[in-house]
Amino acid sequence: MSAPQAVEVARPGGRTVHVRRRPGSTPPVLAVHGLSSTGGLWEWVLEEAPDLDLVAPDLSGRGLSTPRSDVSTMAGHAEDQLAVLDALGLERVDVVGMSLGAFIAVQLAAAHPDRMRTLTLLDGGVPVVRRPTGRDQLEAAFADRLGRLATDWPDLATYAGYLVATTAPLLDPTDPLLARCLARDLERGADGGRVRLDGRVLVDDAADVFLTDAAAAALAALRVPTQLLYAEWSAGAGTPPACTTDEVAAVVAAHGSLVQAELLPGHDHAGVVVTRTGAAASVAALRRSLARAA
Image 1 (cartoon, rainbow, N blue to C red):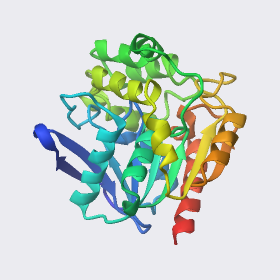
Image 2 (cartoon, helix red, strand yellow):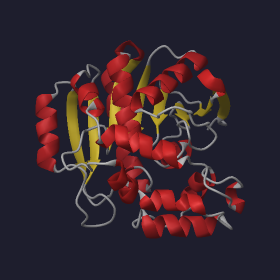
Image 3 (cartoon, helix red, strand yellow):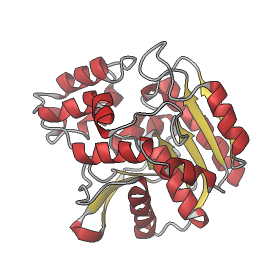
């Protein structure tokens, strides 16, 4: 397994986008993480697939990527991803996105289909039927994420315990891959610190997903071969999913570029990537995309 390479990509306004690339033998894969995570989200995928050439940016306002000063949107993040491809000299890539990252990936595919071979969506990218109606509801819905920001965490274990207790109850707080992932969140890494996440950017991004029609418009414009892997639950066993099987089936029927949708039973939203079994299913879906483009 090759050592990761770190790159800082300059963006307008003095911003930078931090990228880690783990070279491999596959065609390059751009991996776009979710709403409140960093590029560390892909630790389970990297372990499951040591051959993947994986390009994993931190989204603006997360990890080591600086936040934008204006309103954050999916389209803005998509342009950041395009800048990453340009900086690395990558003409065409396969893209995998999880949660918010899936919505951003659809935006990127709709705007720049010539830069993408395939798209793999992991529990995201499909507009949800039951949506919040205002920014205050979004702030309430994501209070667990925003609540992380008020604390200078004394150590990684305390932070991991909070995340499992409030956001992802099916995760194992002692999982060494979770520790490796969450260390990317904190200013002092394994020694704790404040979470490197901009709360205003988080709510901006959630508002663009849930309070506008941008996601539906991008999906309607999608022309890149796309498959979806979606979770049975949202946050813990038995919780209602973001999209039901019938709702997903209706989206697939209405969008010819969505060539496959697969339910991942026994997993919630986080577990689609942040567990070994979820990562195995996600890698299998990604390999199907790579094979389709070969």
